[in-house]
Each structure stands twice: as C-alpha cells, then as structure tokens.
Image 1 (spheres, one colour):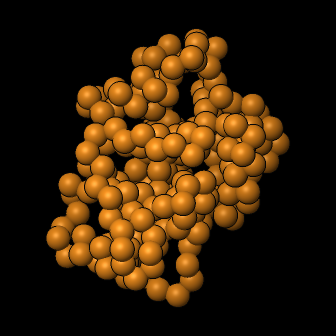
Image 2: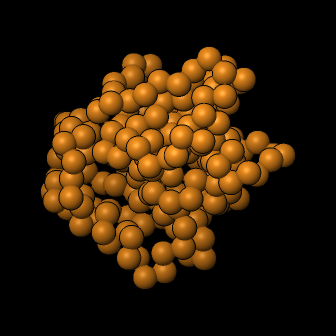
Length: 199
C-alpha cells in the first residue's frame, strides 16, 4: 500500500513523463522467476508505464543489454541487501556505467538497499553486520549517505550511526518507511521527516 510519502515521490518522479517512459529495473539479488520484478512492474503500470526492462546482474547478466539500459528514462535500483547489491554492481562494472548514465542526465531511483547505493559508501551496513576491513564505496552520486527504515533500527545501532557521522564528518540522512529524498542539480528536497545526522 502506498504511503503519502510514496505518492509524493512518485508525483515528482513522473512529472513531465508520459506513457512512453521506459524504466530499467536492476535487482539487488537473484530473481529467476522475476517475482520481485513483476511486483514492481505492476506498481509502475499503475502510473501508465508499460515499457519496463529487467537488467540482471547475476546468472542472466548480458552485457549486450547495457546500451538498452542506458536508453531508459529511469533506472530503478531495487530493495535488498545493500552489501550484496554493491558487490554485484562492482563485479559487473555497472557502478561505472551507472555513474556515466547519471552524469549524462539520467534519472536513478533507489528503494531501500538500492537507495543506499547512491551515496558515498555502504559503511553504515558494514557497521550493522560487524564487517570490517575493506570500505565498500557507493556510486557516489551524492556527497552523503542514506539510511532507510530509520523507524526500524534499534537505539544501539542509531548510536553507532551517530558516532560514525561524528568520526568521519560524513552527513547521514535517515528516513522512516515511506520517506525519501530527491537530489537534482545539487538541490535536495526532503519527502517526509528526514533526520540529519552529522558531526
């Protein structure tokens, strides 16, 4: 069910778009039966979007489809484990492709773990899993990090995030379910109640 925040984000996303809008969907994990894809495709069809391509990073990866992906009006990064998603993007060198797409004026939408990819790094989720060592970079399309589902995290993890922001000087924007952000031409628009965590 859509929240008021979801509807506001969608209104901004589809402003100026039409029924010929094409969306490229990139899953965060294996989706052999296209179950998650079909759910999101149905969601977009509700807005009149009929052309939605599935671009797999896993067993059905096909580099010949990259040009078709780059021709899409919108690229959708799905929800899921942000660390696994980042590893899959880097393994296929799609992080470079998506940066190029964005720098050419393409629109990238990220949901949950997909939204995390757009920031500076995936470190917040390494904090959560206790993973240390290598620092996993995000797509670095924005000069901050995003923490989705803020209403679901416990106080202990929230304190770790605050400490991380202080120690690194990185600003973290945290949103509850249904909240989001739009970054366009260097301007940031908050949808819902976004918490700003910094040093």
